[in-house]
Length: 306
Image (cartoon, helix red, strand yellow):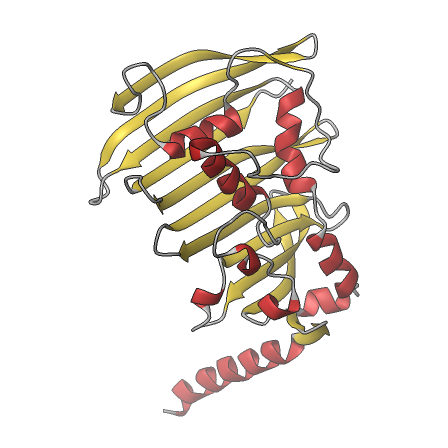
């Protein structure tokens, strides 16, 4: 009996000791738990939070795709309510950039079901969103990767174009206040004190793909789910440059006229001095007014940057 109790007590004491080494800090009304390694590293937490709030590296990584060449393996699957594939697209594409212009070549492609309409347009707004992120339509010239002063807006947009812009707002600006999103614009700003109190927040340190990172995690508190749009987000920041190395996040909302639940995972890499996305996984369930419910899963793998 004693032999069994001693290991148990050792585990309990170890857990208590480990927990006691974490500490909490207030930034405004935000309570943030710091791991022992972060405390020892003397991270300036208020400055770190301000960096996160003003971060543009995540969006800029995608803007960088407009000024380089790259190849992409694309896997888009539309599912029925039972989780079975009802339409799909598997392809390999290459973006060519010459004379300050870019265009896309389709190297391989297989589609199934009603992925395309009869006139070869996308039959799903999930596919439309994917195409707007990774596919080039025709010849596009005169672009840059500048993000300063560039903001998303639904002004003047209607129908699918407006919906795609709203999706991009959530995708590129998780955690920021977003205008133009009906019923939930004030629920996306997770760093504002009145919204931040709905979250448990923590900072840790570890390696991600051989890069030493600060890991900032926000998770909605039990019972507060209906008060926010961002349920959970974990971001790995390079501890030297504070660029986003990877991000996983879950968004959900039910406004009656529309609802969604989306999970996304993004991994970054470097091409020269440029930060670029190398992997994106998406699993989303959307229902918009006057539209059929869409359940989509896609994976984009980017490589051969030039």
